[in-house]
Image (cartoon, rainbow over all chains, first blue to last red; front, side, top):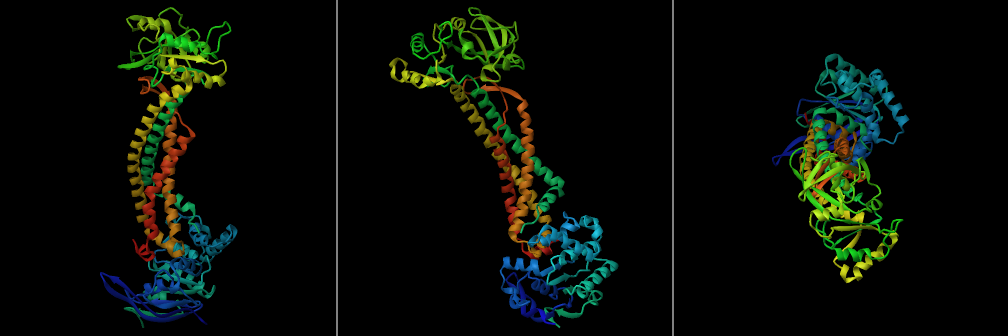
Length: 223
Length: 389
């Protein structure tokens, strides 16, 4: 399988009170298409920073990131926003659903950035709802759903545009054991059945079990 | 690539208390703003429907009201000898020689107020055919009788039918109540011109002459006589409605300027209120903003969504304020008209211009209050926004 994500010599440091704090040190990494890739490491190891860089919501201090031959480190803010909308599906630890929108409307939100017709949007949302098994809850607001259901809606929102890569930052971090297991089964299914490339960050070894490849980060170094 | 409007709409209703307070603040300011404009417009409307476009009113030049105008007998003769003045079927010129005086009357609610008493000639009914006696009868020439305009009839002591009003050292009997359908005349008392001149010992000097031209298109040539005849150069004719409309300018202008000044100061409070609400709204939704940005929505979409929300708050406030103000149309009040220094009754009046300016005023408050918070929302860094708790 060809590499869909090529991280080349990425370094990232934050400046605080005129001191540069290194977070990632010269990381080089390939992730193949269709892989369920898991980044593990303790808090502060830089795993979320690396995920954010690959997802295009942060910029590296140096190095390049090629996603299917596009060097996203060269894109300006506006092009990057457009690129994210069609290539990245986000799954957050705290689901990050919009509370005033129903499950259906939350899932439909990324489709507002596409040129699909109303009927096509409906088709996409219904398909995504079907995959996550929440068709019967589509008119419920986030506060009317359990944590596990909220995360399933968030996953439906992440896959509705059929993005190239699914990025999940501690997707089970806020869930009880059973709900977490359901979410992992769902992610595994998306990877195996729908051939989605998944990049997951977690510090939970149970969550990592589903991954096809696991790499560890420690103090900004890939080990 | 817009964030759907329902996002702004539902957020508008999500925080009922803070949004409700802001909407109320804006509604109150718009209420005051619209009420002031409606008051000024009401005064203007009352005075611009006073008189007739076919009548010409002659007054002394530079007189800013009928009270300060005086036309001696010799000038009256010269004016009445001008051509083009209409005549009744029995050959009498349609001219009303009108002394106008101010008297003090006691309000039923207490206190004194200035009232215009207008002496009119026999031909006044030909000049102002819209006058209707709605109670009692018309005064009889040669008697100390009065008819009272309906706007003041029930507000002042002695103005009911059969009542006596004392002025100029004599008692005058009220014999009728009249209406001119809401014009400024409804706030006056009318009597026989000759009786008034006699009572006030004014000889034959009247305040104004109102007359009808045989053909209204001859007004220009009628006016020309006042420019060419040296004896008439101290006097000038004016279309009657225009004369009274001018009387409203000072008062309406004063109310408008004072009112707008006050409401602009009020609006600062409402704008700051809207700003606080929107800042709180942005602060409460930092993670949402980060999420929307991560999903691919651009800064300008975030700006538009938050501005839409503050516009919505302002528009709802504006509509409520305007709806409340429109109820004032059923309220009639009277006040001292600076133009004539006499009591003038009028209704608050709404016009399309007032509706538009009130709503624009509301939307301006929404824009000013919502702009900085919306810019703050749009400028947020995605990562920092996503990390906010």
